[in-house]
Image 1 (cartoon, helix red, strand yellow):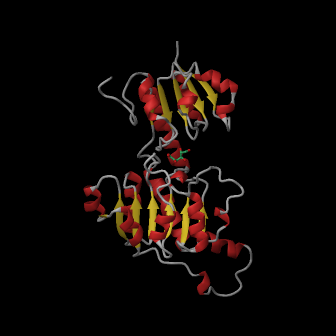
Image 2 (cartoon, helix red, strand yellow):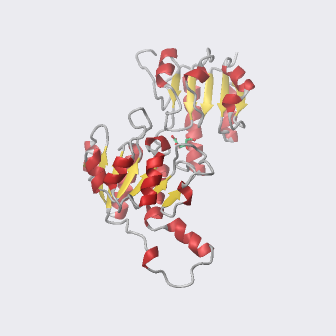
Image 3 (spheres, rainbow, N blue to C red):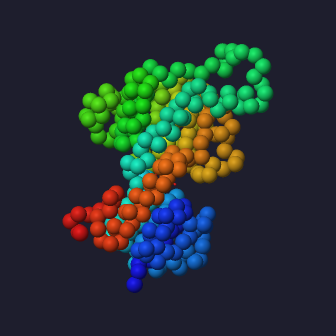
Length: 327
Ligand code: 8YV
């Protein structure tokens, strides 16, 4: 009998759905905005061997009844929606989609750096609303990107791709902070390792790419924004929860920092009453990090390959918690 696979949140391109159908019985819940409240979804959890999707918090309480579950294939690189300890206890394989989204996500970071520094959104709005009636004067000038100091917090694959853009595309002086040093990036990109406080103090642009974990939750608060100072632009493409959002709003309103480019927020979609998108010194995007046609297809394709391999008992291309000793 074919194994059952659930698609939760985020539909798959037709060709990839067909591939899955060749191998498995599909239970498609991708149309639900809040699957966790759905009775049929809850019942299906007790039947499925595999799950594929993204952007739903599948913690212990949700998966408690998923007795047959062997593998989850997340269409994301971030794995903060999963309880890794629980998955390990149950021997459930978790796969994700690194590499294929690295360059696109780094492009998003750079779009935010440029848009914030040169006030692209604010000034495009100024033209659109018909306010442009004389040549631009100083109050509307931006700040340079090229030649400035770029500090990357979290030097993984995406951090390194941002660093390359800064160093080789914009002649920036790059420093980074990471749990461990990456001498390879230091050689290749000429990035300098710094302690976090020193990096925050010294950088014109602070770009955050750390994964969300207990250690990184609210890593950026009042103290960190004060260290950055009034000439610094803060860019976050990782997860909203790494920031104390109240402190960020205050820092932006008070001019403690110059501005922010934000792709991620504590609550997504951003609540309508959030002051963030209304602030002139904020460029806010709707979590577009990897959202291009090409990259989202590549992510879905890798996720499908991962799931087929995992449910066949083979090592997937991108497992997150694969235990070689057990297979
Ligand atoms: C996606 C991401 O938005 O891969 C990640 O971790 O944050 C983004 O690429 C994600 O798949 C959530 O839908």
